[in-house]
Image (cartoon, rainbow, N blue to C red; front, side):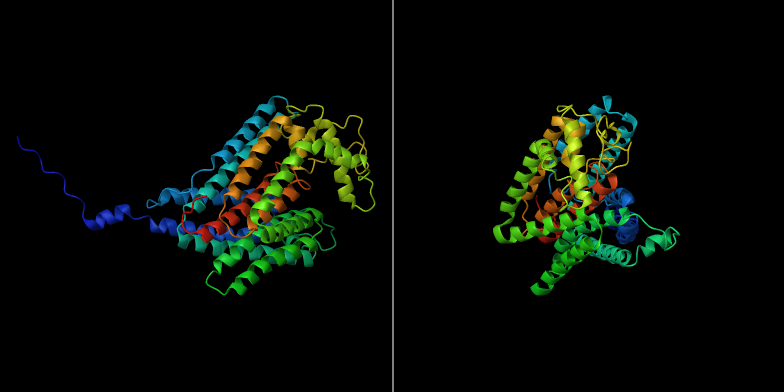
Length: 432
């Protein structure tokens, strides 16, 4: 019995075509990616509340690129299981609290936003880990140009009474604008300035050391100028905290500063309620040495701590802060009938105590441990990641809501830029 001859292999040219990546598709995706990254700089200043769109679109492009590139290699960096497990547990705790939160529909939508942002961050983090050295440099250059455009746009807005924003929205020069847009842009600029100070020297690795140091220092100087030129005291506090942490990391070492930050974060998480009560009892809500916004925060923190004490184990439910009734409490800073808590407690830790109780704080401690462990194991030589952590720890607990998508998106972008700098510094496909 004769067997048919095996099929002949395809011609080399055909085999090469089958294995080759669709270069036109990849080139098109890179073109789109570059356009979006470059546009994101001014966009973060003029429309910071829509920052989540930038993260979503970048994640979608990264996913399409991964699907189109048939030559991709497995990512050597293993998934950070501790961090993702903690984040997943947090989403589950929030979902469980929908059963007793005051407005479950709104809370469910906010929770979905968080889940999508977490997925977007995961996709982008994996995409950066899988890029070649050449692609990393190309991406780094695009990001640095975008951050320069962001800084330039922010400077123009601060110096011109928001001329670009007025022109885009057809607003007359005599109309008084809220500081909200400038404040949001300022905190985003602070976070990204530490990331830029990490990225710029790495992209100039072939230049003299003095020039690399100058580039990093210039990024920090621009961030500091933008923060202190803006009306945002939260941005200013974050900038000071980050600079002090970086200086301390240089003087005593990254791990010593990281240990201190972790101790502060854990202490604040565990003792936030008595700390908030003591600040109020000491009269800081009326202290003339503090600006009015700081006095108001002391009052908000006190009220949030009192209400958190009513349900210390499970909290009032995810996103409950903006819907809690005043009961007998009256604000010294709000008009009669308005909520003592204006949308959120202006503190990540107190918001978790208030909405998710001790169970939520346990999840937060798990996240702190996972992030701290990742930073502890990092091989980065400078203190950019420590500085960013200190700045974020500060701003997260004096400004904005814990679940605001635009603010979390800005944080994600800053973290990704620091990650990109780490990839460039460590070489292609480093281990975490």
